[in-house]
Structures are given as structure tokens and as C-alpha cells.
Image (cartoon, rainbow, N blue to C red; front, top):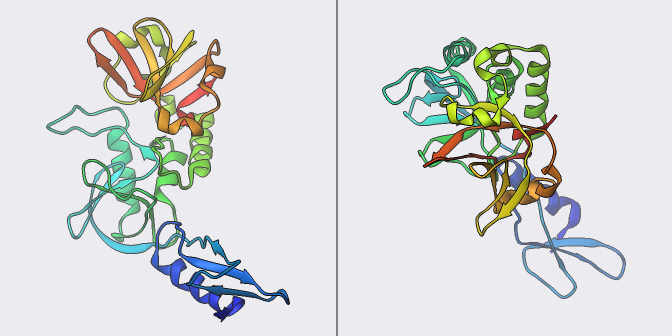
Amino acid sequence: MFSSNKYYLIICLILGFTSPVSFATEIYRSVDEKGRVTYSDKPSIGAKPVKILSQPSRQLHQVTRVYDGDTIILEDKKHVRLLGINTPEIESRQRAEEPGGVAAKKWLQAQLQENKVYLEYDQVRRDKYKRLLAHVFLPDGKHLNLALLENGLAVVSIIPPNGRYTDKLIQAQQHAEKLKLGIWAMPEYQPRPINQITNHAKGWQRFTGTPVAIKKNKKYTRLLFNDKVDIRVANANLNLFPALDTYVGKSLEIRGWVARKKDSYTVLINHPSSLVQR
């Protein structure tokens, strides 16, 4: 057994500087007949487990180059994808340039003149392409993910379970949208009626429409706009949303990427920030 203050301080110091995410450790809290509190790593009669939350840690890295507006490459050749945001694509062998992509890349290059950044991870550290996923900070504390949004160079793209700084990211986007900065002033990103989805461009888009029904299967719940167009939410993420049937009959703006299967179209919605009630 250890005294409560001393043991708790040791645990917090250790966890606060060695782990980038919150987790529970097997520590038990007990109170004796005199009200004295003690902590132990071994369970005892009447002791209750305590969840001790770590603080996010940041790790310093050297940047060798900027790949595009939301991806950087470190000196060890690892690619880092900035969490919570998406910028338009630049031209490559796989895809054509999207409006605003070059501007985002140039802005990010200008921020990284010193080539040093701190990375802060969330719950999931890598995506399906094996890129690191992180919030990126300059040595002076500037949050680059947030700043890209504030300048209208990126849009919010929250993919659970990663959700750190979500509220701040959404507020930054709302600021840029209100002032019509960057992509919010570009004609290519203005909302269009969802019945025009058959003429959609590749990349992130905005559509408006009113869902008329809801349909659920084992994996997704879908808001139907007609028999050929819907938006879908993974059932695993439904807890992040209000009840989806509350969207039925409401005028919505849908933000995301269009997927086509034969003559049907759908947009995957990962987070409520991609559905704006109008």
C-alpha cells in the first residue's frame, strides 16, 4: 500500500508522459475505517478499480517534405496524415488536381520552414495506407490541422474513433465558412441539389436534399432521398448522431464523397459534422 497523494502523483506522472492516449490501468482505491484513502496495484476486499487518464504526449520529428496539403513526410520516410481534416488533392499519376489543392500545399510548406513538428496521436495511429495519423504542431504551439481549417484550405473530416479536438476543428471550419475563405468561396464546392449527384465530380462535395425514409441493415443505417440516392451511417457510429429518423423530412446539406454502385449513389457519413441542417 502507498499513501494516496504520493502514489497517485507517481502514477499520473508516469502515465502522463509515456502514453499518447487515455487508458485504464489496474490500480485499486480503498478507504479504511478512519476514512484514509490508499491505492495499490493489487485488489483487496472493498477496493475499487480506478481509471487513471493519461495526458496526450507530443513527439518531436524532422520533416523532409510536404506531400500535399494534409500529408507530410518525415526524415524516416514515414508519411503523416493530418487528423480530422481533408484538403483537396494535388495532381498525381492516380488523380487530377482539385481546386484549392495547390494552395493548401504551398501554405503548409510555408509553415514548415524550420522542418520540425510535434506529433500528437489519437486512438488509431495508422490508416489503411499505413500512414501515421496525427495532430501536427509547430514548436511554437501552432496547431496546423486547425490553422488549415481557419484559413479555408481544408474541411473537417472526422473518422471515429479518432475524435480529439473535434469541437475546435468544427469551430474553425465554421469561422472560415462564414467569412467565405478559401474553398468556401470556390464555385466548385458550392452545394448542389442531391438530384444532381449523377453529375458529381470526384473528391469532396456538398449536396442539399430532404431524406424521405430510413432503412437499416446489419452494417448501415441509410437515409433515403429516392430509390437511387442515399447517405449511410455505420451502425457502429450511430451513438455519435441524434436519432437518424429525426433527419427525415428535414432540409440537409450533405458533405462528403460520392460512391456509385451501378445506377445507385451513396455518401458515407462518419460524423454529424458532415450533415448540416438548413
